[in-house]
Length: 456
Image 1 (cartoon, rainbow, N blue to C red):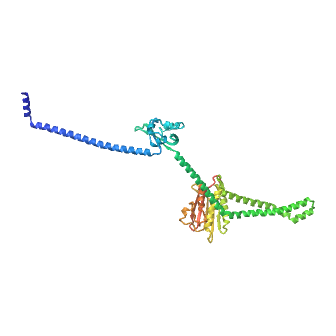
Image 2 (cartoon, one colour):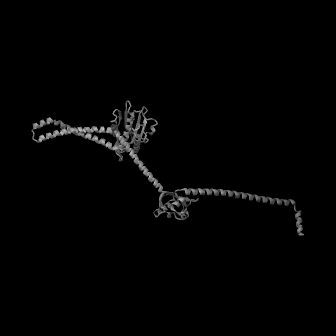
Image 3 (cartoon, rainbow, N blue to C red):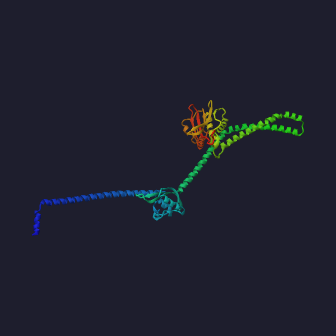
């Protein structure tokens, strides 16, 4: 009866209420299914993102591995205690050990005993700042290998030291390259010195005629004086022999007058002074030649730029007496350096000017010198001008290039101005050449004033 009563109650229940419950259950299921779809969609997205990230990580790892493998420098990663965590292929090849056998070892075990203290000091210092280019030795498969070591610290996101990265560059190839470069530089310097000397000898050859004439004058003077002294000596010997033989006073006076001894005695002082003057002039010429042709570098000494210019001008103009020379030179200009080298520079400049005005109807060479202030420093200047045809605009930028010459073949080596420019630069000076507005060219030489001389 109770079951029947319940059944009747259910039949009597409101149909609208039953339909509402069914609708609610359906909505709930739909909501659950929608959430599951969203969750599944999120999982798929996460899976795609993870696969992309894994692909990127794998690509980055491959790139990192390829970079490590391609490195010729030794790369070692250690923890903060100095235990090896990772090495690259260069380290394996250098030590002859696989990375598996190296990982976990202390880094100092890879060094010979004499380098361990240096490495430990580097590991201590790297905690404060990176270590750069520390020379150290590593045990290699074929013996000790010198390295230039660089150490850098590794920190975690909190700034705590977690490890050290060490990069070492083997110095064997670098040392070999340095030795080859040093040998090439030495050969280049030797070749340069030979070129300088060759050009100097060529300039000296051009001056031989003038120097020979210059030497001929004082030597001829000395030679003539010595002949006169010999004649006077013969007379004096004859007179003294007569004195010793007991000749009377009247006989001696007569002999004295016949030999004109009074004039001979009066001439002795002037003959000796003239001879000494000629010998001094020969000595000066020889000293100038020695300084000009010397291959040895002496220390820098004070020299008179005016004397150098006068000497060079005198030598060159012996071969070109037709040149009209206009000089505006002070009495002295004291510079400091190698006077023979500066003499070579001035000879080259004057010779070029003389060559430029050959064939001109009225060849004029002007040479001036003085002192002026350049950038707050007192500087000596020497200016050489000619009234020749000037220099072509296309040639002006190349005047100081080695082997460049505007002279006909066989007339110039193309090294004079290049070498002169280098000599002046070594002396801390400047050398420039430009065309004059009214024709011809001007060469300007600037040199530092001798610091120890206040008046020169």
